[in-house]
Amino acid sequence: MKRKNLSSTLAVAFLFLLLQPAFGQNLNLGFETWFTDGSPRNWGSVYIFLSTDSVVYDQQFYNQSSDAHSGSSALELRNAWNVSQNKGVEGRVSLDYDSVYTAYTRQEFNPITTVPTGFRFWYKYAPIPGDTGLAELMILDQYLNRIGGARILLTAQTNYTEVFQPVEMESDSTPYFMTVYFSTFTSQNENKQPQLGTRLLLDDVEVTGLTSIAKPKSMKQTMVWPNPVSSTLFYNFEGTALIYNALGKLVLQSSETRLADVSPLPSGVYSIIFGNTTQGSVRFVKQ
Image (cartoon, rainbow, N blue to C red; front, side, top):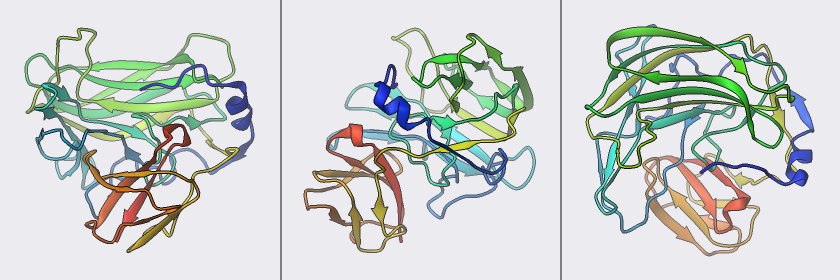
């Protein structure tokens, strides 16, 4: 789901920017840093399934792989199949300035203070016939409308292949946000579905020309604490809290006021989404 044409109130909130260290510092662009549950630092996505859905997984949607272009590890994406809805679910990840993925959509909108000039990465792609991969960098204005970027369709590659594409601006509007997104599947044909068995490996991502980043101060921030947590998780919003695991399965629902008992959950990274999804979601680590 995409957020478009947000209210001017939200746009004003994002105008208050705090300059952060240079881009590339500690953003895990080489996929060398991983959490204990197997998810990559600074990368992720959101998957939402019904509790009644039966889903067949080809491993997790995103995994650590020793088949790296450089260093000791790369990122591997795989698909799943939702048997209940008879449709494929693509493996995908998006870059997040936060170490743990905190967006409540499939892509994170990262504020920027300079315009990138290019998008580079290395990849291997072993698709089941019919699948086409996607790599995309988007530049967005303050209302989250696309004003430029680089979009690359990924084809079968048995060896690591370098890709570079310059960023092309499509508008003279002021850039406010950037997304970096990879997926095992894209298609304009609604009848096509991601297939089980497709495998995409990524390594050594680079956004050239982007020398600094910014972090927004929102008008009201969703907070959970403590994080990591071992038993009781507290949060600053009223209402029902829905907790999903790294595979997008609903594993816990709490109607308690501003708290949830997460002690029964296995160790790992989880997303907590509140009954009113406009309040967003937060990821937390269960010890």
